[in-house]
Amino acid sequence: MRFLFDLGHPAHFHLFKNVISTLKDQGHSVLIVARQKDCLPELLRESGWPHLFIRRKRRGLVSLGVEALKVLGRVSFRGFVKPVDLMIGTSIVIGPASRLTGATSVVFCEDDASVVPMFAQVAYKASHYIVTPRSLEHEAYGPKHLTYQGYHELAYLHPDVYRPDPGVRKLLGVKPDEKYFVLRLVALTAHHDIGQKGVNPAQAQAVVERLSPHGRVFISAEAGVPENLKQYILPTPVERILDVMAFAEMVVGDSQTMTIEAAVLGTPSLRCNTFVGRLSVLEELEHRYGLTVGIRPENFDKVFEQIDAWLGQDDLKQQWARKREVMLEECVNLNDWMLKLFERLAHHKSIGFGSISRTQRRLQERAHAPAATSTETYGPLERDKPLQDKYAMREPVAYFLVKHFFKSLEELLHIAAGRILDVGAGEGDAYQFLSPGIVARGVTALEINPVCFVRMAKIAPSLTSVEGTIYEIPFEDDSFETVLCSEVLEHLDDPDKGLRELLRVSSRWVLISVPREPIWRILNMARGAYWRQFGNTPDHVQHWSKRGFIRWVEKYAEVKVVRSPLPWTIILASSR
Image 1: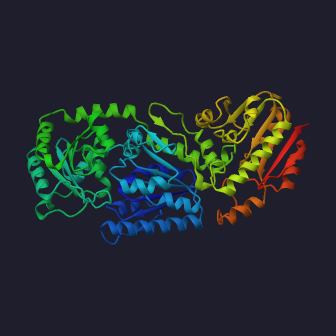
Image 2 (image 1 turned 135 degrees about the horizontal axis):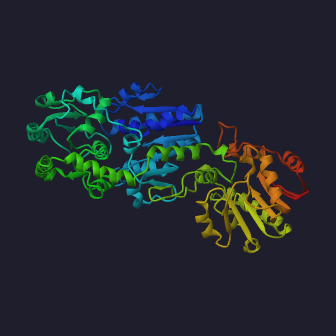
Image 3 (image 1 turned 30 degrees about the vertical axis):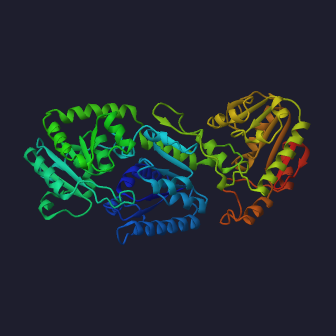
């Protein structure tokens, strides 16, 4: 499988680095697109991973916009030249790029939309999936919103993947029992930082003076610092900053990310900027777990009060260690969570069960993700009209074709009597077109993805839903008079095995449909879709002409009736 990761910040590198490493070890192709942001270039060079680096010539909103357009062009071009299965990142470009190239985009963010409105407006609308911590579930982006209990920073700071190196003390020149503090100053130049305030140079000097009598002070700064503060600049390589924070007595500054990092490491952290009170993740870390404190710049005097209060506690780090344990107990291992999600989305061909559209394919893949628990949630996935979800489209021609298809399907269902097993029922969209009389006969819907059953219950509440795969249908031989399998076989690696299972559980009739080739491809190209694949819908791995499909079915069953509603072939067959 081919994955593309768009990294715009050092935190994004850390968020995905363990997942990228695992995917590479598993033999997947991983392309990395990166921006010039802080130490990100150095981190990528240190990793040794090939990457496409987009340079930033100047600061400012206009420069950020030009950079975004440049990245969109590069990412889209790469997606056209070598098709990508998944585009992943905290990025405004992968959503539009995925729509242009046919990839699936998964956008990660842990900032509230009110804080990053431009990002949310551009990235969320175009993306296929939005992944956020559960503290942001109130934003409710609909079925494509997936949540987990935790934070981005746990992807690289969870005890399962990270152990701080005490050797960093030697690099800092501090003794094993000597206390030291970190002051973090950011440049506030990101698009969402424009107009915001943090710690100014005079306040930074005041913090240094307050902390210095109690231990060494080190400054980590995105931009330059005044001459009088340069003596405090961290002497360690940028990639050791996490180790530095892990053993620090406390971290003070105006950085959101490093505040969260310090908190999940179990280091007391205090931030002072105008974002305080506006970020759900930090609010949860502060008020639910007590791991950090936020103070707005207009109340800067309270910074000194908090610092003094912490300095007066000899067991400060021990207290934070206990709070951290509570937090970790309630959070997921984000790397495992992401890998499960990515593998289910990307490995659609290995699931052994097809469906009616790319969106329905994703819904089936979702079934292989972990079931929702108190610490991990996958929302039902979106209905994705731009990816040619046939049943959701509202264009007159597409609607006419779909309606005509179901008219033909219903005619054959009236010929085939008895109870119905619908294999690959998806969310039950077909029953918006079929008459109530069909459902009244008694329909059991077999679907690999239990998430589909939520919407199915609203569309056709009288259906009996059963989880299962076409390769191992969980019913005895001859269990149903009619077995329906619509728009599934073209997705299977082993359609012969699938058809044999359909015939096994049918006592008389099997009703199956597939796209009619090459008409299907021609119509796709006529509407400007999938030119790179010569009109082939990406999830289709089997292709039949009308005559070829009839010949194939005749190897296993007796073909009774054939219908050809453009652009499909429908066969009603009886088992031998």
